[in-house]
Image (cartoon, rainbow, N blue to C red; front, top):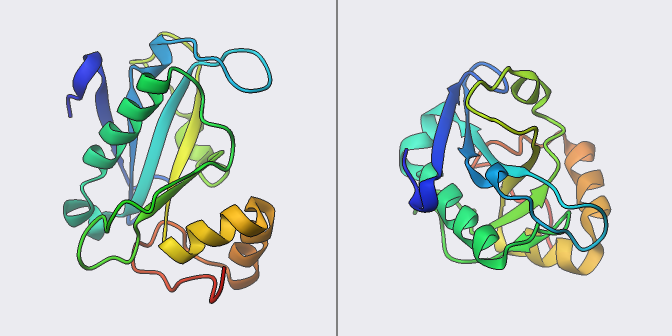
Length: 168
């Protein structure tokens, strides 16, 4: 998929595992972006979901919007940034926000030989979350939310997964 500013979106079937699809921006990494703490980085954005949810979720649109935001701000989003809620990604899914985090669940995807990329880059996973989960992360922190994910073994790539919190 072609985005604005010379960016494209790449898709990978059966990544990070069979039955799932991953999507990656290509072109943000041409920019060396400053971060709040640390050296500037080359980044790309990753979104993934169950393959059967791809058509209605429109991952390329989500990534294009996020890429526009990153390039407009010309900086690396701080780890565990929450974007939104901004409205449902699709009527059938409760997800309305994104949590930006390192893609620890994407080792196979990250290890691929990306011949398209000229620079090494840091992938940032755009994890779909509900409005209440967004509020929870903002008030209790990402580590607390990650413990909830691990406690229930949540499939964070399933856009129809049950909400992980009952209060913010």
